[in-house]
Length: 175
View 1 (cartoon, rainbow, N blue to C red):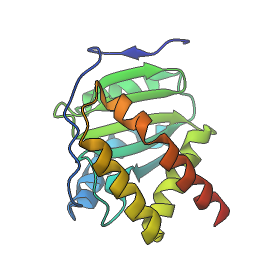
View 2: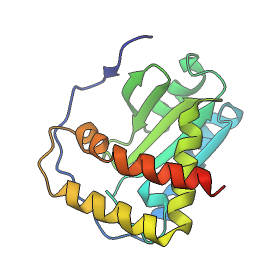
View 3: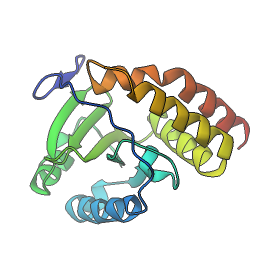
């Protein structure tokens, strides 16, 4: 696979960042159970990632879940069970699949064992969980960017790249 396939095309959505919701952890736990039940041992690792995984951090109200599998190209091992569990395929691209709930409030990122993005997700999450200054910087950045008009969620996400890279750098240095 060499191209990105976005099922349903690009969607323009309003970016809304809300105060942290204490129920996000339980919402994640519900989806973790659903995913683990659907995939069994095919799921090598399942993690809560993204802003909703950080207590006290303002976020878009979308639960992000990381699922790691042995072979991303073996879609038959994980995609039909995830679809049967109520998720819909949204993105198919080299190194990454994204399925989500019909309400778009849960995004499941499927990556392959050894993908460097796995460590990036976890380092960012862990740094934001334990560093008040970086957590506040990230919250301010997201709120400022959310006030703008974006053509897509990807454009909003891309605008956060500089801040995320800086936080990742500090997170790696503090390990």
